[in-house]
Length: 420
Image 1 (cartoon, rainbow, N blue to C red):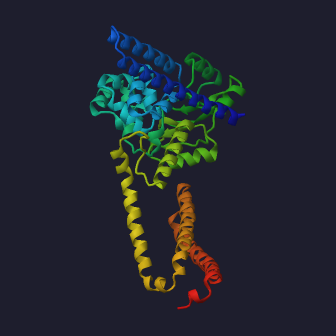
Image 2 (cartoon, rainbow, N blue to C red; image 1 turned 90 degrees about the horizontal axis):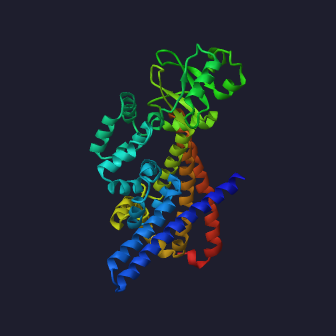
């Protein structure tokens, strides 16, 4: 059922894109026709048609979710992208900037003035502003900091003070805190007065007067226990928490290991600073997977599908240069056996087989090592043993498959063609 719903969602998203493209193409066609025809009040007719198509396109965009608009913007060439971007409701600007890829975000921000950027970012939560901070102009960031209250400014500066791939960069401040010296009935009344809970809330954080984390109260326990029961008796003191400067990869593995939906983030004194949710973890994993795929393809950074030829070419030069150097090195190795190959022409036809086997062996080893590094399975204590094992596997594979290739070559070229 979930797979079917996902397929329907993908199809609907593609339909939205096709409809937007259809409106854009219709607008361009009508403008071209009007410009080619001589008629009275030509400028007025062109303006009316333009406004009509703009209104139809805006009506379509107003019906879409911000994530769907982000997808459409990424699929459009720069000129059409900016045209659509200028028709999007201003209250969606901030969320769309968060949803689009880094490369597309740059093109959108470059088309916005200072007031538009301030209006878009002021609608975001503190942790979301932190995500956009690296790409915002300095003057916009300064005005934004001045517009925040003391608490939110301190939170934002705390997040920006840590490196990108730390827990602090993933945490948010949408948390509910309670004291342990109250009853569950008081907690329930407090939650009703709040009216709503932050997204992905599966537990409440129990703190003392100094904001030190004492434990967590899962919502399930809150609902199934007596309202007269004290929080201290029901809460869990065995808490999976993370420090601000902890590695985001470690947090992602912990979320997978313990099936977490949210977890508290504390400083070195165990004071509660925020929380990290499963949505942030999923975004982090997706981003890292994207970076790994780009690295495997030899791309230094995410590339806009419709970026300029010059920018795209520069992004690909580094690994092309590396491949060129390694190719020259391999030709020099082959050159060492030039006389042998000249006498035994059959060796030239066997070289691609040897190169292919060597490449596949290297790919198998590198894939295993990269996976182990990602899971933090390789340590200084076992690294030496692992290297020895992989070298042994290499020698064994070389002996076995070298023998197989040798027998195969002897069967094909074992006559006078191999005698010299």
